[in-house]
Length: 113
Ligand code: SF4
Ligand code: SF4
Image (cartoon, rainbow, N blue to C red; front, side):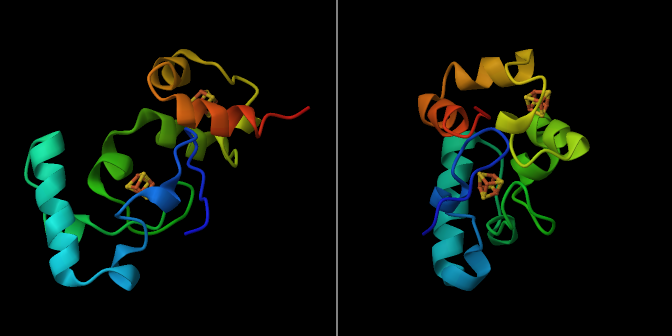
């Protein structure tokens, strides 16, 4: 799977929901839904396990569609990722990147020179 960098620097290409309708069977999507319910709480259904990717229009998995403030902000600012934002390092992003070094490295590699 190719890398598909989200606004926050995560690699959507490594997420099981990414284009799952085309890549996974219904049983495999249900297994991911069961894992997410265990890992993140709540009840995830098979319909939740499909996503166009953070920076693309279309269906998104529930957290990324509704709850992620970084995604909402990046979409409003029309940046390709937070790396291109004039406010890079804002509080929303810094709090997240402090706990996710891979996402931080992906964004740092995309910062303008
Ligand atoms: S935006 Fe979609 S593909 Fe990317 S991490 Fe979130 S759920 Fe996964
Ligand atoms: S303000 Fe922060 S969260 Fe919003 S696009 Fe810029 S860096 Fe990302």
